[in-house]
Every structure is written in structure tokens, then in C-alpha cells.
Image (tube, rainbow, N blue to C red; front, top):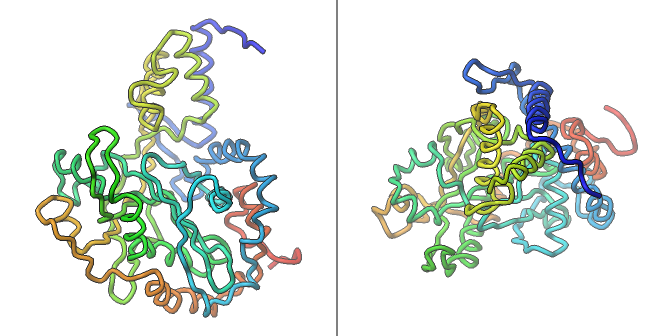
Length: 400
């Protein structure tokens, strides 16, 4: 069915009205310079800012959820199926087009802040509890962004250094535990697994012989460090994360609070239609491809043309940035002043897990009881409604 052609001036007005209304719904106000501010800076307000993204993603995945949940429900745990003292985590690196990738996709849909599929190099892990065959958590690694001031300042990179050795890094854009393991502080355990010999070796096996798409040169990539950032401002998980006097993450500062998450997909598509009507090249991608940079440039091009300051992309929701060094001399290697990598203190998944279970999960299991009452069907409720992410789901329909 053909869509009605909208005059350019009317199209501009529609986009302006839709954008202003959407920002008000999210709780944003406009500063004098056109940047955004959130009146309520609570974590709940942060989550609310992503509510439209969650709704869009849920709608997009509705058929997938309906079809795959019955097949993969068995891999999620009831509280009664978890023995905290016997927990034995194991990593499984997964490939696209497998049932494990479907399970990963289902698990990622429980995140209160929607996560992307990542760009460039990608590694996705399922974290299994071998004691019961249930899924504990997930880890998603992707290529890091090229410009990240907090990271680059910590390393002491020049632009030449970064260009040469950014391949030695990855970014954890998905990192966490699922219920009921999350109630047992399993998120801390899963996070610590980034700094493991298992992750280092699996990365080497997959990417050490890779060739650059542009340079066509062998990268000889080694995973020296992984960055990640909190989704809700200041992190309560990564700060002071330590086992046996070994720190696993270092805080580096905050992101710039600049981006396009506040532009929902429906409005983005409307912007693309407008740009197409004026024959703008960004409407259908450009020389930069169709990744996040193209999306940002497309939005900016539309805003500039319809007369809204692109300062609206400065949302000021800053995320705390962390680095997880696998090599003890990560700065020197990334700077290029040392060639030999020191893996001093790097433990296996099994060694880390044993410490983490004793340090966090077993004590928590003795002090709390809600985890015992968790029903795996609460996972589906989390996927279908964000409010379930923060309330215990109990078996047999019983309340607290």
C-alpha cells in the first residue's frame, strides 16, 4: 500500500511536535543552550528514559518470544533448583544460528535497559551453572568505540597509538546474571569472569590470525583489557569489585552524556523518510555504513534541516566507565612501550568462581530467602514487562 506524500513543511512540523512530545514523556526539559536535562536523576528515571526502546524491542521480538520461550524455558532456573554451595560456573562461546544464540537473545531481553547487537568483532558467552545445567548469566563483547575520552586518558594514548592497538581491546556491552542468581550477587561473579584465562584464550583462538578489513594486515590481536559502562549512572556492581586482594575493575570517569537513545525507532524512521523526500544521501546509509555513527549523522542532518538544534543529542545521562585489565602491564602494552605481555595474577573461570561463591553467593544465600521462591516463569514476565525486573517472582502464586 502506498503512503501519502506529505509536503516538506508539514513533515518538518510533524517531526518537531513528535520529538518535543516524546522528550516530555521521558521527563526531559530543555536547557537554554538546547541540551537536555532530567528533572529526576534517580535510577528509576534512568530506566524510564529507555522505556520506549524496551517497548519497541519487545514488539519487534514478539513472534520470536512466543515461539522460542517454550523451547528454552527449561534452561532457566527455579530457586529450588539452585544449590549455592555447589554452583560451578562455566563459559560457553556461542555462534550465530544456534539454539544457544536463541537462548542468549531471550536472556538479553530481560535487561531493563535494552542492549544492542554490537558491531564489528563480537563474542557472546553463556554462563552455565554446571551443577544443575541452568543458565546463570550472559556476557557480550563487541568492538570498542573509537573515541572514549575516559579510556584514552587512562591509557595515555595518542591517536596513532589508538589506531594501532585498539584491536587489543573489547567492550562488554552485555554483562550480568539472571534470576535467581542475580539475587545471590551472581552479577559480581559474572563480571569477574571477564578477567580470566578462559576469555583471553578464547579471544586468541578466534581473532589472533584475523586480518583488518581496511588495512588487510594481520592484527595478531591479544585481549589486553575490556571496558564496560554502567547503564544507570554510577555503578553499584563494578566499584570495589575485589577477590583475594585482586581488583577486577578500575573506574575511569564518565561518558560525555551524548547520543541518540532518546530518539525512538519510529521517529528515526520518520526522519529518514523526510531526508529521502529532500534527496539527502544519509536517508539510505552512507560511506560510513549503517552502524551507530550513521544513525547519529542521520539524526543530526534531519535536526539541522528542520531547525532544531542538534544540542538535543546532548542528553547528559552520563554512564560510569570502567576498565577490566587482563594484563598487569596493560597501559604499557597499549601505549606500545612494552611488547611482552604480563598475565600475572590471571585466573581461570573455575578459580575465580570458587572464590566468588565463597565471598558473595553463599553468604547471601544464608541471609536472604527470596531467591528460593523464584519461578523461572518470572523470566518471561521480565521480558514482557519491565516492572517485573525489580520485584521477586514467587512460585505457586504466593506473595511475600
